[in-house]
Image (cartoon, rainbow, N blue to C red; front, side):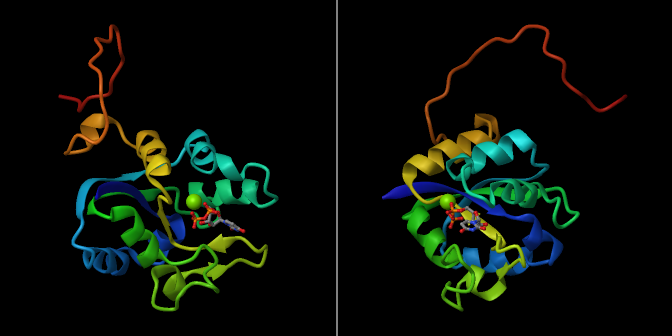
Length: 168
Ligand code: UDP
Ligand code: MG
């Protein structure tokens, strides 16, 4: 079963220079990276990403965490991994949500920690189901940023759209 999944290296992963390490681990899956970007995380995107947790007491801090405000590193590395059983493979490599309960050889088990507030700083996000993957991929990426066709698209003609270009 070919699947796609959204992977985020969260701000704690970036600030602690774990990117190379994490990417090496992920490369063991033999999955293909079909989109990748370093991006700032708006409040809107952070809130939408974790909308199912909005009633939790840790939600405001979770939003700050994803936006990089707890680590003074306002960005994440967002990627789409694609291939056989991508969702299960990534979830298993990432490990359990709580880094102290995660398998010690998993990414979260190796590098995650719990803040004094109780928030899980677990360095990586990986989508948990096909429905979540679709929702999250469409939240973080536009079709033309992905080198394969994952979901149906439509062409629209936009008028008077302001874009920024390189100055001559
Ligand atoms: N989280 C937390 N405490 C909890 C549950 C979740 O701090 O009790 C944080 C943690 O950073 C987690 C994120 O919220 O990765 C999203 O939670 P979810 O339940 O979706 O876990 P995940 O899918 O990331 O394993
Ligand atoms: Mg989740």
